[in-house]
Length: 96
Image (cartoon, rainbow, N blue to C red; front, side):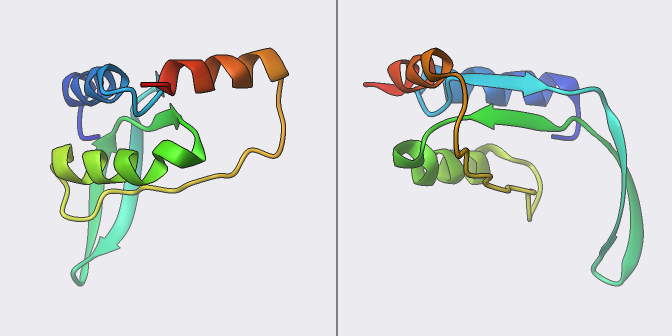
């Protein structure tokens, strides 16, 4: 997200909608990237969003709808394992 306020707002929305169990807002970072033929520089707030596979499509759609960027960075990383109690907690938070 482009700033902390918008990152917090999106995080609260995703958790309220039960699309995410937990979201970490990381320290601001500087992104340098090519966009439409130009080199861009931006300060951004990376977000780590924990969800499960059954909620992923709805989560992605909600991010795209709320995100101010034309092309937000959304990358899905499959979790092969973890502390079973934590993974159970994640799933319990997403149960509607």
